Length: 162
Image (tube, rainbow, N blue to C red; front, side, top):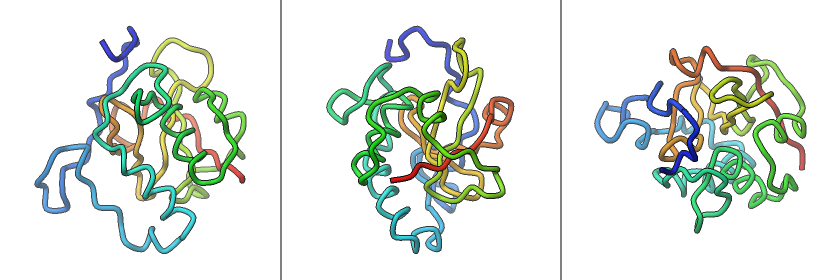
């Protein structure tokens, strides 16, 4: 059981597959080209998308072990020159500048509460813009943060600094 006994509901809010509705829900997603004009975000996205489809592993923090949500985010940002170490979703929240959804841009983090029984933030993902994120569900996949499941747990957005 790769969920470590945590009752996540990872199957909610998946976008259709490819832009024409083909492909695998949550795995095939075309990011808008204009988002990739920001070089910093393009580098983050390039690293993040390498692992889409990788199985979820509770406590995982490397491509070899697999990832949990915070392990995935920490890996992607550490590989891009940020010094976030290895921390939890709540730890990432504490390290980030809190911003509104209106201020959020591709490459910021999105945070959720109540996805399992833990105080503070319980899940995090990389915001892609247009209400989409990529995060370590089971597997790592794309999801709409305004789907019925994620919307009820949406808690905030954060921006990391190098």
